Amino acid sequence: MKHAFVSNRTSAALVAALVLAGCIGTTRPPVSSTVPAFPTIGLQVYAAGDIADCKRRAPADSMAARTSRLVPDGALVLGLGDMAYPLGDAQTLASCYEPTWGRHRAATLATPGNHDYVRGTAGDFLQYFGADALHDGGFIAFTRALTDDWQLIAIDSNVDGSALQAQYEWLERQFTAEAKAPAQRCLLVMWHAPVYSSGMHRGSGDKMRRFWQLIDRYGADMVLSGHEHFYERFDPLDADGQSPRDGQAPRQFVVGTGGARLYGFWKPPYRSEARVLAHGVLQLSLDHGSYSWRFIDIDGRVRDAGAARCRATAN
Image (cartoon, rainbow, N blue to C red; front, side, top):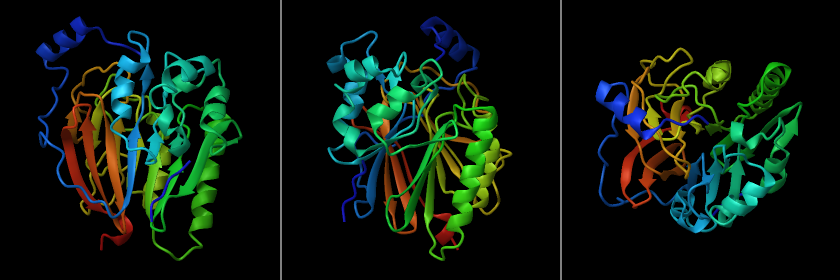
């Protein structure tokens, strides 16, 4: 059955100098010049963050317009934060996001990024993307059953102090309540600032490391983030950045490629398996006990692809 659900910049000269100095990695070649066969039996999900940027181009000519065309109408979209630039206020959402990715709004579940907080509040973000998000105790978070096999948890990585602690306690309660249910499930988690990345913002997600430890303990399969303006995929990693021998840990995807200006990589601090400097979207196929992924750039080329079993069904 089909399912539908409702920064800093680096100049070109500096990027070139860092590449020559070996401080920034180059992108890996595409896996294929054409889109290969992809599972279609599971729920098809499209994810991207750092999207609507119309400062230099009209909406119709922006990169956000091109990435939006990679997503079929009615497909489930996961918005990974920083939905509009330079700030996700009502005016920018209406003038830049709506003409580009607005066609997918009814099927979008979004988590906020730092640019979605305007003067300390994410009110415009909440109003535009609807009441799906839980705004509780100063944070924005929610859970959704995507299919009988897959659960989504969205977390707010932009809060601190008591709000961050309240969110952690909320997440613990979600897991405690779910532990009473006997059914196994696969778990997808999303928040904006990644714990692991090879970008200039590395470390911005460090406060989320204890959340990583918690979701790892409860069997999370993957974490989707944005914030860094490139695509990157890691091996499964624990909260210390180590790859467990049995491979049982969450896998980080960074997909800050929805349309905002891109920037390069620094030397990877952890085991980075794929790095692509191109605008595009991550397509996921969420199947029974497994998932597949591919990163598709704006020219329709598959730049990274793979598949894995969910941790609950791996043995």
